Length: 226
Length: 140
Image (cartoon, rainbow over all chains, first blue to last red; front, side, top):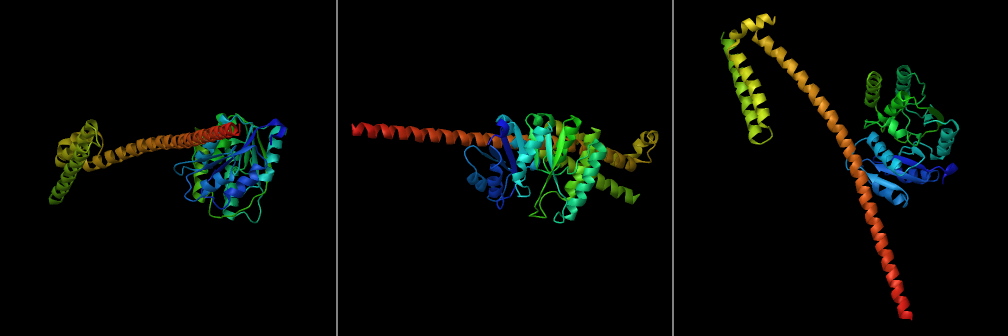
């Protein structure tokens, strides 16, 4: 499906997501031309299940060792750029994001002529308190350091215009990557838009931890200074 | 005085033991000659300071350091910080190299599998064509 003759790809970084990966791929494929699944050295059957769920036009890559979400996204973006796509969607493999909102991302990208669109999670009762508090601190710090109000700097559901990757190419390997992208985008004065997204939390103990939050906080300071 | 002598003995023994460790690493080819000379000199300096601290009283006085022990402690701290700093830089550099390598390997592996798949598909298409040509010739 090429919306407005655009070639759209979804990058799905995955680590030990054998429970959800098949559903994420099948739901995502309805709204994009093809998917790039990057298995980040999973110890379960994520890679095999992803391969079985994908078609000939899709890409399923595997990292030889677990290297972090940042590296998985980097790999996905390198391949996406080689495929000369117009829009790149990043979506998590844990079924947290609603793939049916992908067209909203693309519409926002086109209508607002943005370089990057972030899906901002609605704060609800189901969101673990640690996430709520951590997000509040990080969002506030980001606003103070970079002068840009972003309601959810940690969301992994995003859309990128082609060519943005080369401007914001990152070095982070872990969850810090979400913030490094935004910091680089602000420094390069790229246009960032937001849309509201729904989320589901299947696993309270996966994803960003308090230590990741502290790391992100320190890194934000160092990126600003250096 | 007896206490200082025992300390000197321990310090000297430690320096000699560490020099022996460096030499072992050199024999195992884990250390280059340059590494052995560098660390050998450092352990030798420590040995001399431990055995003849009074000889350096003038030097310590000009540095406003109370004695050999304080000098050793301060120098050791400085060296530790330096080593930590360079280790940190090196580990960050290696981390980034590993990340890029992981990306490269996964992309190359995928390319190899895709190329292999494409060649398998073209081989099977070739065989199908040959089979259909044969059956056609039989029909004639």
